[in-house]
Image (cartoon, rainbow, N blue to C red; front, side):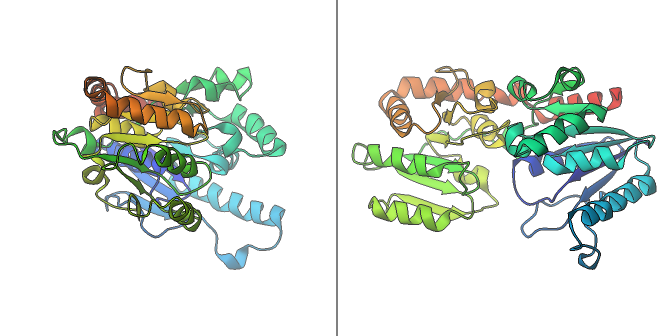
Length: 360
């Protein structure tokens, strides 16, 4: 039986965490021995099968707080001991510093390590020092998984040569669901309420069309540190009866399935699961054409969705109008968007990940 370690900070609900859980379940179904290593446990995490062995890598607090170098050494030893104890055939790591630690802790061990950059590399590795470290450490990874061609430009040629672009697998609950025929006058968005998701732009754009389409409402799903700020902006615009923010929900497919438009207004994105899932439900998507190119990799302008410039609330408002004013165009976007269920079917994409890791 092949053994794989999957390494990520936590299983707190988010796009990368969802992909990690999907892959864990897939490898389990393929009779792999799956060990899922997270630094810690968060509230409201994704559920995983009891057959997947969950291990926590964060050392006891009493062992930390003695300076950065000491803390690094403690974490390094903890991870290296885990790698030695479980002796996996391959380690697959997701995100930021986890990738660096996974590679360093496996040095000179007979274990292959694949690291996955999930978004814009300059956001995952902020600052010149971290970017230098990432470019250096990635040279020693056995495999590098990127989301887009654009993300690869961050790395030197030696890293790009060992890189591969693998898509995210669609969540099965979105591929197996019937497309809703009766649409409500809803614009929906889903994502963490933070600066990067730029819901401020979305609220401003909705404010520009609110009077033109009095029956249309906006719902923003997600939670985050900017909730209060966004609620204040909504109140200032007098839109509290038109814009709601229900927070995190479990039945997101049911919630957004009846919407006429799904929108994503991020400043940067890797390969957004939320866009993929909305398209699978046959919802026309409007997204910012942001680095590192994830939305543009999914959306063909005017064919299966619309792209607008980052931060441009006027362009977003015009895109809303284009869909609301042209039912035939809206229907075309729905039908073409739905085709993603074939190109990114989970059984197809998961197999691509498995084949790549087996090649290592």
